[in-house]
Amino acid sequence: MSNSGPAASDAFEHGSLAGELDDQPLAAAPPEVDLPRIERAVREILAAVGEDPDREGLRETPARVARMYRELFSGLRTDPRVHLQKFFTEKYDEMVLVKDIAFNSMCEHHMLPFIGKAHIGYIPNGRVVGLSKLARVVEEVSHRPQVQERMTEQIANLLLEELRVKGVAVVIEASHSCMAIRGVRKPESICVTSAMKGTFRSNLSSRSEVMNLIYGHSK
Image 1 (tube, rainbow, N blue to C red):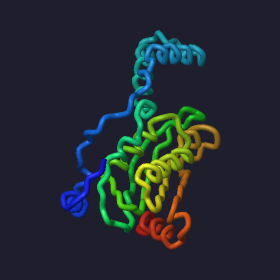
Image 2 (image 1 turned 30 degrees about the horizontal axis):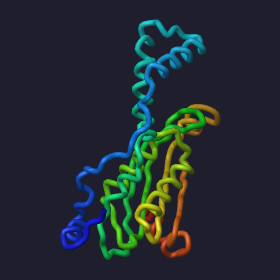
Image 3 (image 1 turned 90 degrees about the vertical axis):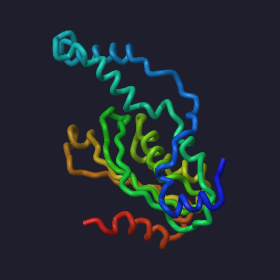
Image 4 (image 1 turned 60 degrees about the vertical axis):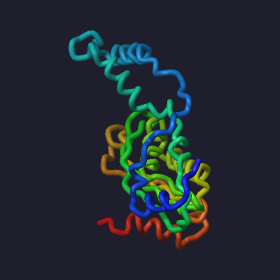
């Protein structure tokens, strides 16, 4: 399942792991989204708030919303672990950090989006993974009903379990629509969550290093 030798080493040194082929099969997916059921539900919501779902501007809205939900919740039908199962054997034991991985997700409490960026750092234990795979993990974990705290933990645990790293640090920053457009209406607020595992949890200097690399050049 792993690759070793000079070819893998050269790929790592020249930064080409980020562009490796995504040729591994996906895990078996659960049943497809029930689009007609969503359309019926959206029609009911429109009627319940006092609108006419048959007027010209809303006639196609239920179908549009159904297709949108299929896209936004696509992570329910994929297994993010598959992106971490192809790795490269390397004697590299310094930190690997990918910053500013953009994502969007849906808060499961109000079914409103939260949008932000994830930073992932890890210290390998003989295994390194293509950089694009970290972004794919974020994408699939975020595309399901979520809360930011759980999403942060899930990403960290995936790397810990699949790559058996010495340490992993995940920091997520996001703006939540449920705070920006309803309730307290604070559009400038940002929620920051972190998950520190292994070395990053037990070693203060390692934790300080990763946080400085993430935020050290912020203005």
